[in-house]
Image (cartoon, rainbow, N blue to C red; front, top):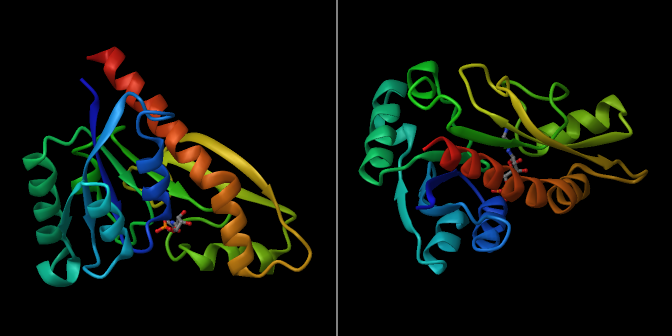
Length: 200
Ligand code: GAR
């Protein structure tokens, strides 16, 4: 049996697309059973629907408190028998009361080489802006386990990407996605799913 994966998204969903496209190829030991969006208008939901994957919307705004939001999220995941959660551009912080229910069963992709340019407030284009402002010559992407510390869980895989002279946050974001995130995330997901199956 393949590991049942939920991908949590908030926006465009290009990393979700990379995972969808990897199914049956790089990603052999797991299958995407559910896509949960924190944003009802996320294009990622369209990508999931086109691929015939179940979707749900769970937003903090709708549920009011962090605790109610996390409870609802947990209910949806449990109802779908989810074994592994992948955060792919998911923009809501998860607290310890949620993450502790899924030890080593939540992955995140972050668009820098952790521990640079990570933690609270570092998401999306802000990460690339910070790398350009600092003047680093190399950045990249990291896939890591998620615990209660934002971007602080154990690192699973990293890939470096060179910064080019006239980069803007947008050009850098695109290159980091193409060269690192879309490659690394399916590979790391496969490794973790295969590991979970060996344990079962
Ligand atoms: C990706 O670059 C992802 O690494 C980043 O948001 C983007 C989502 O794009 N995540 C974070 O910054 C988390 N801290 P996508 O919706 O096209 O996959």
